[in-house]
Image 1 (cartoon, rainbow, N blue to C red):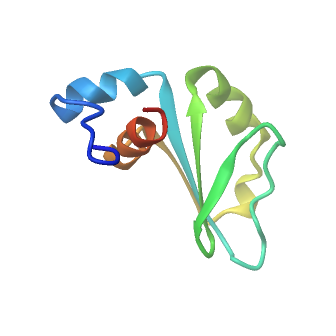
Image 2 (cartoon, rainbow, N blue to C red):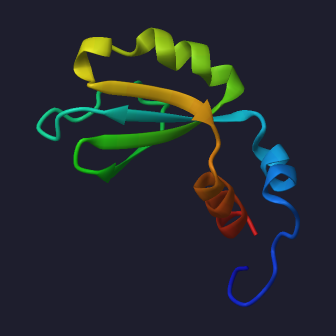
Length: 93
């Protein structure tokens, strides 16, 4: 729902199909050393030392090859989450 209007109905798995070409990149590191990423990556710091970016499938290889693994304590790449699904429908409706 967005402003009292239903923007999507369906099972989460069915709704996530709209995001099947998107991946979630989560980076964890020192809050004192902000994530250094290519300028074309839109990344949000969700809490000190934790950054999240949503990538199109075509961007995954480029971003992974550009990351310095020594800069981060943890790097996770996975499919879009239910939170990403909510943001997708709330922002684009």
